Image (tube, rainbow, N blue to C red; front, top):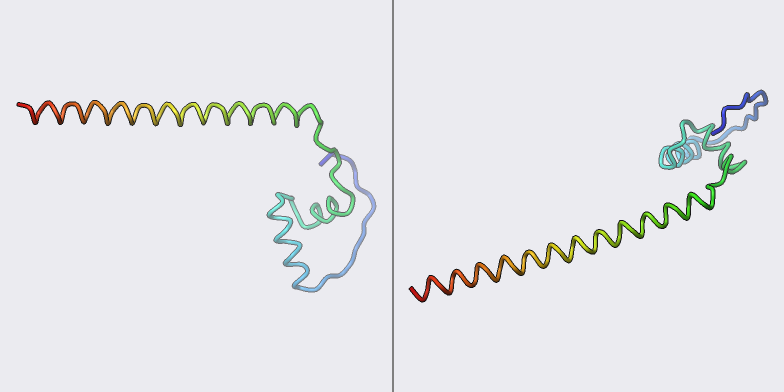
Amino acid sequence: MSFRRMTRMISFRVSNDEFELLRSKSESQGARSVSDYARLALCGSPSAPDDQIVHQLSDEIQQLRLEINRLRHTGRSAAILHRSVFDRRKAQRRLK
């Protein structure tokens, strides 16, 4: 939220159930207060995410996916190699 002086006030009444719903939604959305949540819900976000930032984050997420897949594959390869060495040693012990 931008730091602008807010001089106007809007007031309206809600039931207890409505207030609890607003409070719950404001907490889940990370708003500082029910008032902040209501302001954002009614007026929209003060600044939409920059397309360049969204594109950069998307690229970074893709890179993380690739790295996770590479690590997963490396982990599987290591497990197969370990199993192979273990089986070979087990077979060698049986031959002795």
